[in-house]
Image 1 (tube, rainbow, N blue to C red):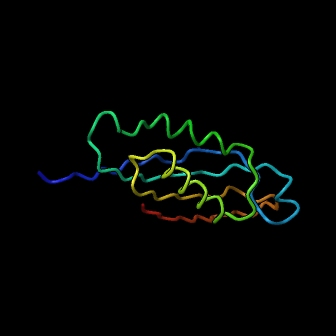
Image 2 (cartoon, one colour; image 1 turned 120 degrees about the vertical axis):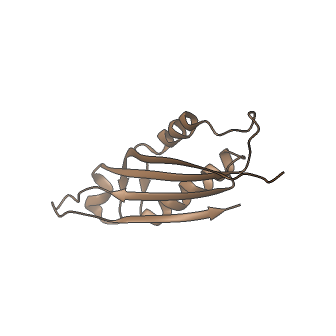
Length: 115
């Protein structure tokens, strides 16, 4: 029997946090949008991924401080692989909102990590 791989997509979870290296970024709360693609090959009901648990897990990042968006990506991706053993690959995308200076900020960055 062939082993199936499942992709679970969770899109646009909004997380308020402090993100940036400049002084004004460190003191002003911004909302980022996090989207995930989680890969699992498990079809055992005891090791299934609960979407709500994943979303609730992301609450731990509310109001946290990250200097670089890459640090945030890496932290989320590695934490998910550690906390949820049935996940064997993660793809995390983070989008920043508007900057304080009023300029549209269309930055989107993603990272994929595999066990």
